[in-house]
Image 1 (cartoon, rainbow, N blue to C red):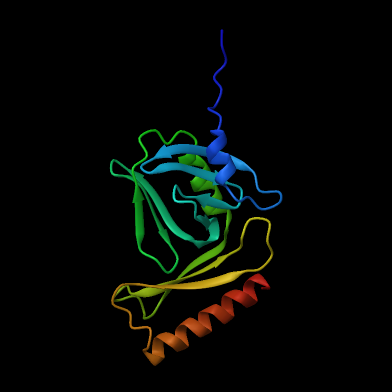
Image 2: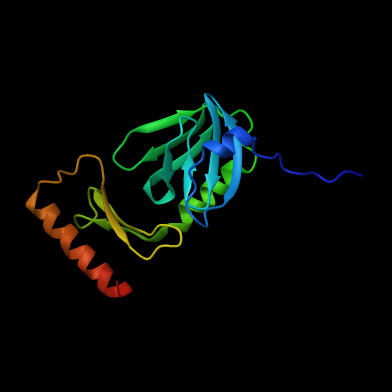
Length: 162
């Protein structure tokens, strides 16, 4: 009986990757336009760009393909007919960068609006980056919002000792 083995990454794909020292390949899958490669530090796109896991806000798989949102950019969807272990690797790596995620309401809860504070750390790194994700309709220039975000961030940092 032959054991199942994962497919090897083609040599030409491996040679185009600019891996950092200690960065390992975890999974790969064919996508439109080339090969997606998940490493311990980043998602390497077919065009050759690497997106660090801590810069990916969200990722999801659907019938349309693999869609992810890079911090500061819009959604990118790539058709991946057979994701294999790539889906699992992407989920695990993105989740591993999240130190804490806390939702904070802006009011007494009657209108349900607020924001999410997220602390992320790169794989193997120690620097923490904080992000604020406002609910739709929340004005980032509103002094009440600015004050509440500042207060909540201060409280959370104190609780975590960060």
